[in-house]
Length: 271
Image (tube, rainbow, N blue to C red; front, top):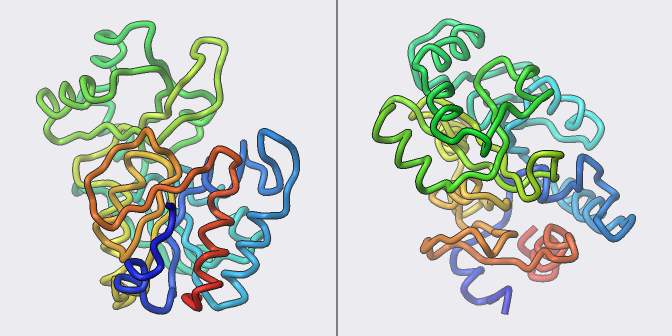
């Protein structure tokens, strides 16, 4: 069973904020109305229901804040978390809190600092043929480095932790197949203290938010870290393993998981 009403109501009170991943969560290949099976209005109607109820939908994404702003304007969102938590944006850019994780003055300095640690070059050498820069997105990103490939993530994560304790590599989930990789994932290289979880914690302090009014939705190992900061986290990929007690696995084979979550919350008067 995907939903246990009594358990959910113990943890979640009136919903005020949804922290949600974007790609693979409520859009398919950047399209709100698309699934791998065709067109649908389900996720669009879920977003409408959330906004109509006054719920703040906060995108938490690896995308640049400038790109997220375009999406936010189209969908009516105000606040979002960009660059895997490096920037927390309010009212489509009126206020931005940076979460660099190191004492550096700007985006350019941060990306250069990561490069100069040597971690990316070492990964390319050690895992030759298994990973590369995720172009053109890696060139567009101004804060950190973005790779794509088919890595044994626990192994490469252990390697980075051991050799570069000031750095972390983030598996941000599956992406579309490329000419080189059939089942690739996107990997972000960021400072150790950076991530979606830390950004949500900052947002909670900034706006004096209560855990009991917050949920998260996502499909990656990085997304599920948000569970530590919210009442409930809905996980759309069963291959991502966690022992966190407030995580609910949602079948998303039809790419309608986001819609089913919102439908359940609405029926149970949690919106």
